[in-house]
Image (cartoon, rainbow, N blue to C red; front, side, top):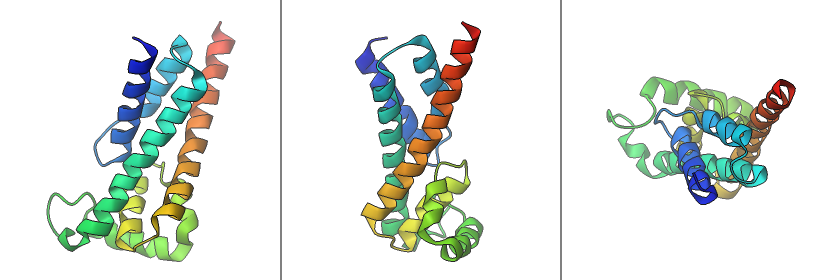
Length: 149
């Protein structure tokens, strides 16, 4: 696989994993890093940008499609919406640093949109959290690969 294809695959894997679609971009990240495919910082950056933009798509869903929250296709159930809206109001925008967490993160990003959180601070906080998660995953993978070599 060429580097450009690896970066594109990493981007789309991370983007889709940030939406309500199932995905595990960490697996691809680890595979690319351990195999030495591409520049590690570009792989990491591509994963972070793709995953953050996937969360922006969730934010847009919440921001512009909130009137359809009772529809079956809406990405967060009414129960989740109510529960996480309360948590979001309680802990504030800092909770967006945890947008990387499975299930909870998707709900947080949709709720941030429904609550009309401004896009720039949303993107910065979500991006910081996702970069932190990918750094931990990458560091662990490279440490294990180095120890096993």
